[in-house]
Length: 133
Image: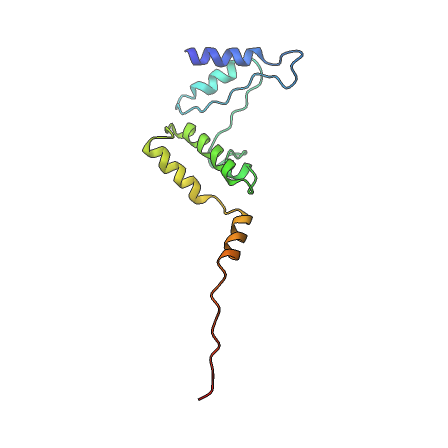
Protein backbone atom coordinates (compact mmCIF):
# COMPACT_ATOMS: atom_id res chain seq x y z
CA UNK A 1 0.00 0.00 0.00
CA UNK A 2 2.97 2.35 0.55
CA UNK A 3 3.85 2.38 -3.16
CA UNK A 4 0.32 3.34 -4.15
CA UNK A 5 0.33 6.16 -1.59
CA UNK A 6 3.60 7.49 -3.01
CA UNK A 7 2.29 7.32 -6.59
CA UNK A 8 -0.97 9.00 -5.57
CA UNK A 9 0.94 11.85 -3.88
CA UNK A 10 3.06 12.43 -7.00
CA UNK A 11 0.00 12.48 -9.26
CA UNK A 12 -2.08 14.62 -6.88
CA UNK A 13 0.69 17.23 -6.68
CA UNK A 14 0.49 17.64 -10.47
CA UNK A 15 1.58 20.91 -12.04
CA UNK A 16 3.20 23.34 -9.63
CA UNK A 17 2.79 27.07 -10.27
CA UNK A 18 6.10 28.79 -10.95
CA UNK A 19 7.86 25.55 -11.89
CA UNK A 20 7.79 25.17 -15.67
CA UNK A 21 7.58 21.60 -16.90
CA UNK A 22 6.49 20.27 -13.52
CA UNK A 23 3.75 17.68 -13.47
CA UNK A 24 3.00 14.47 -11.67
CA UNK A 25 3.78 11.45 -13.79
CA UNK A 26 4.12 7.74 -13.10
CA UNK A 27 4.99 4.82 -15.35
CA UNK A 28 3.69 1.57 -13.94
CA UNK A 29 3.99 -1.96 -15.31
CA UNK A 30 0.89 -3.93 -14.34
CA UNK A 31 1.41 -7.68 -14.53
CA UNK A 32 -1.76 -8.52 -12.59
CA UNK A 33 -4.62 -10.34 -14.32
CA UNK A 34 -7.11 -8.14 -12.46
CA UNK A 35 -5.41 -4.96 -13.79
CA UNK A 36 -5.06 -3.67 -10.25
CA UNK A 37 -2.70 -0.82 -11.20
CA UNK A 38 -4.82 0.21 -14.20
CA UNK A 39 -7.84 0.64 -11.92
CA UNK A 40 -5.71 2.51 -9.39
CA UNK A 41 -4.28 4.88 -12.04
CA UNK A 42 -7.75 5.66 -13.40
CA UNK A 43 -8.91 6.55 -9.86
CA UNK A 44 -6.02 9.01 -9.36
CA UNK A 45 -6.31 12.74 -10.16
CA UNK A 46 -5.40 13.89 -13.66
CA UNK A 47 -5.44 11.97 -16.91
CA UNK A 48 -4.47 8.35 -17.36
CA UNK A 49 -3.04 6.72 -20.45
CA UNK A 50 -2.93 2.93 -20.48
CA UNK A 51 -0.57 1.40 -23.01
CA UNK A 52 -1.15 -2.28 -23.62
CA UNK A 53 1.64 -4.35 -25.03
CA UNK A 54 -0.07 -6.83 -27.32
CA UNK A 55 -0.74 -7.51 -31.01
CA UNK A 56 -3.12 -4.52 -31.27
CA UNK A 57 -0.74 -2.02 -29.63
CA UNK A 58 -1.05 1.47 -31.10
CA UNK A 59 2.15 2.75 -29.49
CA UNK A 60 5.65 1.32 -29.61
CA UNK A 61 7.61 1.17 -26.38
CA UNK A 62 10.58 -0.46 -28.09
CA UNK A 63 13.66 1.54 -27.04
CA UNK A 64 15.63 0.14 -29.97
CA UNK A 65 13.14 1.84 -32.32
CA UNK A 66 12.65 5.02 -30.29
CA UNK A 67 16.30 6.03 -29.97
CA UNK A 68 18.63 7.15 -32.71
CA UNK A 69 20.31 4.33 -34.65
CA UNK A 70 23.60 6.23 -34.33
CA UNK A 71 23.60 5.72 -30.57
CA UNK A 72 23.15 1.97 -30.00
CA UNK A 73 24.74 2.08 -26.53
CA UNK A 74 22.07 4.52 -25.32
CA UNK A 75 19.34 2.47 -26.98
CA UNK A 76 20.72 -0.69 -25.35
CA UNK A 77 20.80 0.95 -21.91
CA UNK A 78 17.17 2.09 -22.15
CA UNK A 79 16.10 -1.24 -23.63
CA UNK A 80 17.74 -3.25 -20.85
CA UNK A 81 16.26 -0.98 -18.17
CA UNK A 82 12.79 -1.26 -19.70
CA UNK A 83 12.95 -5.03 -20.17
CA UNK A 84 14.33 -5.77 -16.69
CA UNK A 85 11.42 -3.79 -15.23
CA UNK A 86 8.87 -5.40 -17.55
CA UNK A 87 10.13 -8.94 -16.98
CA UNK A 88 10.95 -8.57 -13.30
CA UNK A 89 14.58 -9.58 -13.87
CA UNK A 90 17.49 -8.32 -11.77
CA UNK A 91 20.25 -6.95 -14.04
CA UNK A 92 23.08 -8.79 -12.26
CA UNK A 93 21.32 -12.17 -12.10
CA UNK A 94 21.98 -14.83 -14.73
CA UNK A 95 18.74 -13.88 -16.53
CA UNK A 96 19.75 -10.21 -16.53
CA UNK A 97 23.14 -10.97 -18.03
CA UNK A 98 21.49 -13.16 -20.69
CA UNK A 99 19.04 -10.34 -21.43
CA UNK A 100 21.91 -7.87 -21.80
CA UNK A 101 23.70 -10.19 -24.23
CA UNK A 102 20.51 -10.72 -26.22
CA UNK A 103 19.92 -6.96 -26.53
CA UNK A 104 23.49 -6.40 -27.68
CA UNK A 105 23.15 -9.21 -30.24
CA UNK A 106 20.23 -7.48 -32.01
CA UNK A 107 21.70 -3.97 -32.04
CA UNK A 108 22.36 -2.70 -35.56
CA UNK A 109 26.02 -1.90 -36.23
CA UNK A 110 26.81 1.81 -36.35
CA UNK A 111 27.69 3.21 -39.75
CA UNK A 112 31.08 4.39 -38.52
CA UNK A 113 31.88 0.87 -37.18
CA UNK A 114 31.04 -0.72 -40.53
CA UNK A 115 33.24 1.83 -42.33
CA UNK A 116 36.12 1.23 -39.93
CA UNK A 117 35.92 -2.52 -40.42
CA UNK A 118 36.07 -2.25 -44.20
CA UNK A 119 39.00 0.14 -44.11
CA UNK A 120 41.01 -1.89 -41.60
CA UNK A 121 40.40 -5.26 -43.23
CA UNK A 122 40.50 -4.88 -47.02
CA UNK A 123 39.89 -7.97 -49.15
CA UNK A 124 42.98 -10.00 -50.00
CA UNK A 125 44.42 -9.12 -53.43
CA UNK A 126 44.03 -11.67 -56.23
CA UNK A 127 47.01 -12.96 -58.10
CA UNK A 128 46.94 -12.79 -61.84
CA UNK A 129 47.22 -16.09 -63.65
CA UNK A 130 49.67 -16.48 -66.44
CA UNK A 131 48.44 -18.22 -69.58
CA UNK A 132 51.93 -18.83 -70.92
CA UNK A 133 52.72 -22.44 -71.24
